[in-house]
Length: 203
Image (cartoon, rainbow, N blue to C red):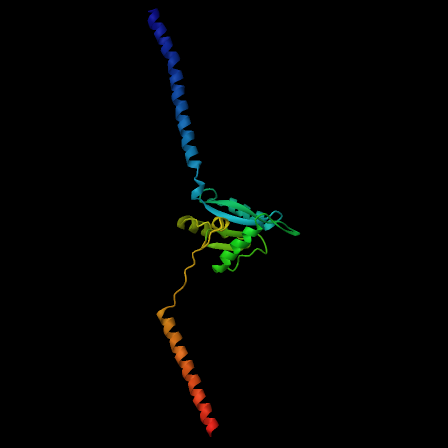
């Protein structure tokens, strides 16, 4: 009888420990699953570059807007670059030269709103480059995320060429015909005018 009671007491002591161990294991697995969901591969994120000045209120507002988007750290991350250390007075920052190179590349690709005269200068992949504060960047970020981030800034920083693939537009057949006809008409008109003037001189 004593053996049975001892056995029952042992079982009663072991049972709560094993139940707690199972619960603890379940909790650990739940935490690990939640951690997996939160861990994002930053290589897959679009890099939104902000060339800023340390005393620029518009830069702070731009950062606040971007950090408030639901897709922040899910679709994109922010990379800060120092265009000016201060703008009052204007003192070039550590990334000013890079900013100038990036702007040149974008200007040559047809982005006319990018310059190093002010801040913030915002760059998103190869689809957005503008020196201004904007709260309308989410569609550009989504597009860059879907198409894959081209990261023009990193390309320029690495000293590579052809950081933006610019498609050269071919002239359509209609445009070529119009151009040829225009040349023929102008040539004919000049020829006719020459003949008219030479006849007039003879008279």
